[in-house]
Length: 478
Image (cartoon, rainbow, N blue to C red; front, side, top):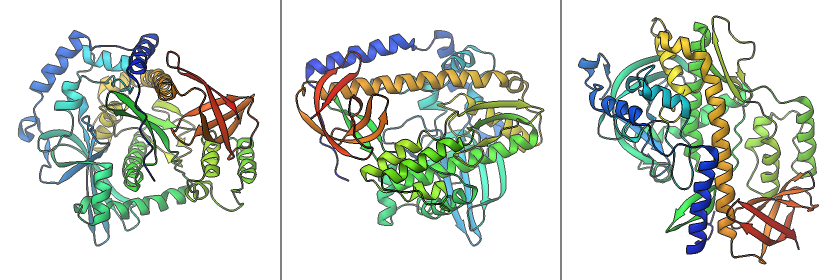
């Protein structure tokens, strides 16, 4: 797909955008710095927590040739993998950053991470869950250095089903840091290391397993904010196949973690209720109206996987995104909750693979490691388990507000100065007294009041106004 033409912001627009983004952070009450006591704890941990296997009583897995796959420029590396094909399937090692080793329960750093909940991302910089001395340094699985990790080992059959799972606290050493784009190019050229080349097999098999359990991946291309000189540009990101295959590694691990905690009757799950039957019926009617009917007898996931990148398909996915709502966290200790399924995945599931960036994963890791090795769950984790759902709910709401507010402001800045121009757009859905649309270029989404056009239709719109200060844009039909 051709790269959208960058939209360079004027100096005046850049200044107004910077002020608007700063005002958004202030309005949301986001922290500007790390508290001194928590920062000091992090620095001490970075210097003092041992990475020598003998000194720390950890397994020595440094001979395994792990690698990381992340967006270009990432430095907070939570996961590293090694995938080796065997005569009967494969062996997957998945190393997750040992964040619990660096955070003292009950300390100042622990308190601050609970307050933050997760790393927040904005165009003008991220607000990390942990201080960079840990998240981009001592705890990050950077290449060429010894790092502590929780290492999941999956023995997989020919269908990439786990037949044996272990979880070990260890020292690892990543060999290489790959970006998704570079890794995909190397795979396509056949020059990638064996772990990457095996990902195509793994991804295909795990997609089949997803189909069997009734799960579905809804991959809606998102508008991505990219730095462009002194300004920003918007790109519609469709991703590369490796991103989906790599996501299946995380999904497999999260399902394994859920199984361990359900067997042990203590833990915290990521749940989502099934779609309401009336919503499903409405969605099926919309697919017919858009000319892409969801046929009876075709599984929901199979239908979504068969969609292309046409405007009508984009509109279908917009409706599909509203089918599954109500995702949350459920903590339990002793009594297994009635609802354990993450409906979009089609199985019990837990967040456990991103502890540098998400608070809940720290609890899941220590609980699973204890249960998997026949030990008592640490008292600090058990005692505070019931607090985690509310902490994550608050931080997730904040992340959504920041993400939406920042995107609105960048979209307005990209359009600022082009008032009066006519843009082509695709109607995604009818919304109340108008329609939600997405411009063809730049990929800006907006609500257009008074627009009466069918979802999937292409329309022409004139830009009336673009306010950087509050992120509002106004269009009128031509």
